[in-house]
Image (cartoon, rainbow, N blue to C red; front, side, top):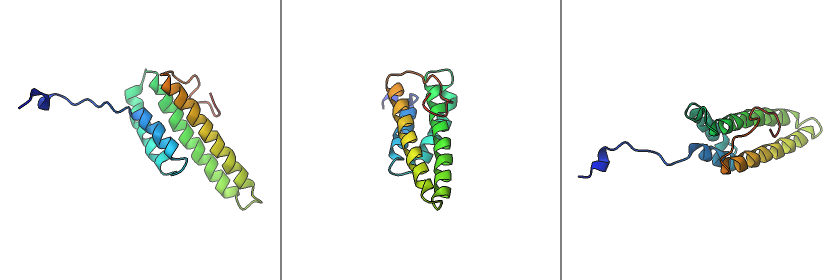
Length: 120
């Protein structure tokens, strides 16, 4: 038998990257955003004090603001189409935040203002 069987297993999966992928998939399949935010919450303690911590905060904030904006948009849909404009604006906002965060992540850079409402 190999000694490797008793060695501790290390994961090479970058879970913050998986969270970004879930967020990207949420553009088409919104439910995957829930998986992404759960991953971000789970990663936050492990990433504390590293450049990834700002990305966890960014992803969590993006999810909750997107959810609030989408809820407001859907509530306003009957109001002469105003809701449709809100939903389009929230969709564009979400994509811009996703791209900005992912680009910084790809460069292994923290986000300057992860708590920012708009684009940090």
